[in-house]
Length: 130
Image (cartoon, one colour):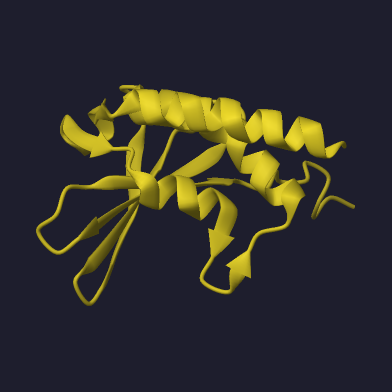
């Protein structure tokens, strides 16, 4: 992996990200989900600091899948968690590959926005068989 590949991917993802504005999420009763700076920043940083380059690149590559998952009629909210004034909603789609969870965040009475996409680990089909 060269640095040029990382920077090209980051710039192309940022260009796509900025072009989205918002998307209608069928899984959340046609709620507008905004793509603001919080979500893109979360591709690059965690609360503990900068993510490893490989993790950033994996998240950049998953952005188009987040759009599909949020827009697909078969997607469903899986979990809602509230911490103080912040609500996190995970949206999943068992029919989409690669399998991933899209996290939506809403702060207080603000607009819900894309916060993260997390790839789901594949289950080992041989696990537990002997």
